[in-house]
Length: 353
Image (cartoon, rainbow, N blue to C red; front, top):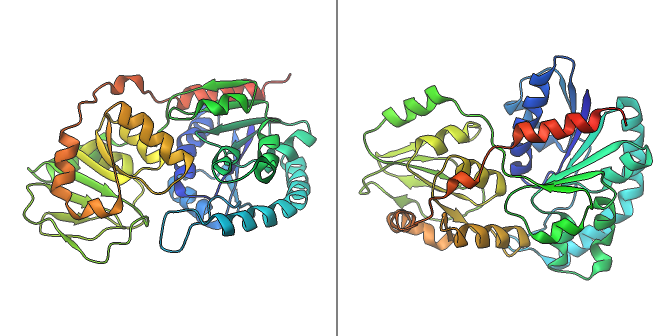
């Protein structure tokens, strides 16, 4: 079986959540092969997470995503509109180029997360298409613009043979594809030995802080007086003998989430999924005014499973931990890893009609 994954270049989270799916497909048969289409940055990330020689990478696909105001996580509606319109003019050439690629690779299933125009290319060739996501760009852009701005996205999503909508999504998506299923979560794998090593590295309660490049605090935050050990990735500077700085290219985020008692993280869907599957309450950074963040906030706040925070609240880490402690959400059993189920659907779709 051969599959093509068109993965949006709008953040690493989309790539992260496809890692377990690709791994599962490759493990199922030594004859299975996968092509990944995205940009150089995303493909480089996936190469660090996937070691198989049966994955081929193509860096010629990108999309607009969100254009933000400089130094903020707030969409620049004027610049974004210009980018959408400019990109729309290129769609016919993108589609024709991909039809050439797909005709050569001949996949059994074309999978999109959450790129829209490759669906059109695949449908023109009568190839089977699957959309997987927790939001779509037509849904996202509807927050800012009239329908004529984003209707070409919606038209492509509606061409898909099937859609799988992850946990924490708007019911609006149910109208985007008549053949859809609501599924739970996925997570990259974890290593129990590494988790045990992290837990035994310090007698103090442990806090994993992972904010990526989404914050820009000018001053370091001294946490030396707090009775915790902090494991910190890039994006925030914590100081003290109780701080462990992790490498920028560290990929085993699920190990630290499971090993630590508290998580303070950027509220992207893939990180949230890994936190929920680990059964951890958390503080999540709200990145901007968009539909995806609003839905994540609504779901997790109503379930009392996360504290939603803004950048300025990071200056008092002790207070954040106290707020996490005050959460009473405990029903994490509603979440489960649906990787195998998703791959079962892909295998079924690959069967001859």
